[in-house]
Length: 263
Image (cartoon, rainbow, N blue to C red):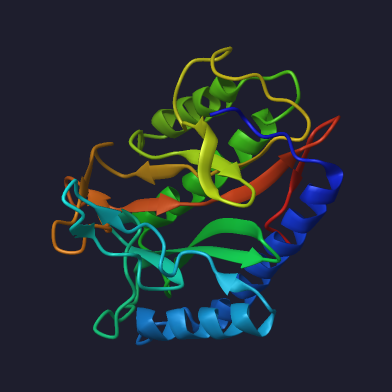
C-alpha cells in the first residue's frame, strides 16, 4: 500500500483530532491514583471524548474472523487500552483491575473527529515508583524524543528505529520488535510501518506531508512478547518484567516535524 501524503487541510483536521486526545490525558491525569479501577478511567475518557463531538477510535475496532466466518477475536470493547506493569499494550480496562502504589500504567487513546484520527499513548507512574521502574519510564520517554528528532525530511524511517534502539539498549533495556508506529489519517495502522529498531539509511524516505506515529515500547527484560489467549488482545512481556510506552502522532513539515497529539 502506498504511503499517503496529507495536504495542509488534512493535517489541520488531524491536528484537531490530536488535540482532543491530548486534552483527554489532562482529564484523566488527576484520576491515575491508587485505588482507581481501569474501568473508571475508561468511563472518564469516553465521556470526555464524546463531549468534544468525537468518537472513541478503539471501541468496536479489530474484530477478526476465521475462514469459516466465525469470530476468532472479538472487537475491542473499550475506549482506552491499558497496560499495567508487564503488559505492553492493548490491555482491556476492567472493574476488577485496580491501580496500586508503584504501578506503571500505559494508557493508549484514539479519537476520531470529523472523520480523522488522533492517536497517542502516555505511561503514568501510580504514586511513587521504585528506582528501576523510574529509569524505565524516563528512558522510554527519552526514546520517543530521540525518535522524533530523527523524523525530518530527507531522513529514512530506519533512522528513527536505529536511534531508539541504540539509546534503549545502551541503557540496558530491550525494544519490542513485533509492534511499531504507523500512518495516521482516516484509518489506523496503514503504511508506513515505523519500527523502533533497525539500521540507519534504510526504509522509506521521510517526506513533507507524511503523518505517522512513533511509539517505542521498551522492556526491562526480554524483547519478546506474548498475546493473551483469553481475550485475544492483551500483549505482555514473555518474562513478566515491566514495559513502558510513549506515543505521539506527528506530521512531517517542509523543515521539520509537528507533534499533533499535544497541547
